[in-house]
Image (cartoon, rainbow, N blue to C red):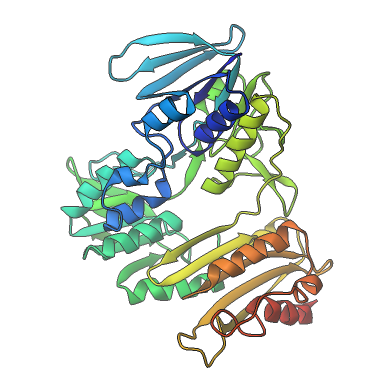
Length: 446
């Protein structure tokens, strides 16, 4: 019997705790979480803001008493781990409610400190009414401000920016969305992002592309967003410009960081310090397209990393292979999916890449509800290997992006993709699926 201490109670941390305890019921497992929730779904916060989720507690997968009574895991919320003595195997933790600091010994340690929102060095960024969105507490604060506001400025046109823009518009608020690049969704190619921009404009989101925010103005509370092109009155601002790994504690105790700036681990989720594991949004992994380190902070990978770490903490030999960066969201009625590399990303990583843009039916043209999908397929000119796909449409995006994720993971070529035995029936897909069409068309560019 030993003691596992987990620092951080979100996806990777709770997955590691649960798996380790399941593998070794005799193990004592303690989880320290600095906020008030564990095992929650931050991806659901925009839907809470919109009102689709009535109560913030509905975004919690399991209650504290479930872990304590059903799983035998000692979860302590509002507890901040302030330091770790790796030689003596001691964790120093402060109870945020009482201010009391204590120390506990550990046999194994899991760092699941997650990521933190990027706050750019912009004048006025600490004014009241300027929010970031990471925890459920962040979501509660933002919703309270949004409800009493008329104009919301959103800085950053990625997934969170787009999702919150939809949520706020559905509350009847005016939305100004600022993106410093020339297109929405920075991980997409400009061409693939056009349908998303059209959907946002159709729903009266005011897009300000190629506009870098340089200042926030206000006395105590923000009243204006200033860009390189103009000044705009706002009541509330959301900063949604990305996430960086929360690695301050890891750095302080000598844990090696990777080339992405996140914690470096091996395939077993072990760090360079014996008996210390890491996983989730504080940790880098391998991109399966290049085989090189990458930092892609998404929930499915975080859960799997935690599960692998937990199994190995309990004596197993599980491996986490890496990711291809598969993601999906929606902008109002438009489904938006991506996996692997965009053309821009593929070229930046040294591939002799080409892309083709296909617009094709989501189902048979005669079947009610027929609509068109947009697919940008990316492949390597020399090897014909499929490198990525960006898909938008009003239905059927999930099936295609997941299929492409499997294709990319298996290192399949366009020759193999075009012969995949994909399902066909008029309500679900045309006889020539858009993936098959794209694979045939892109080969003309080789």
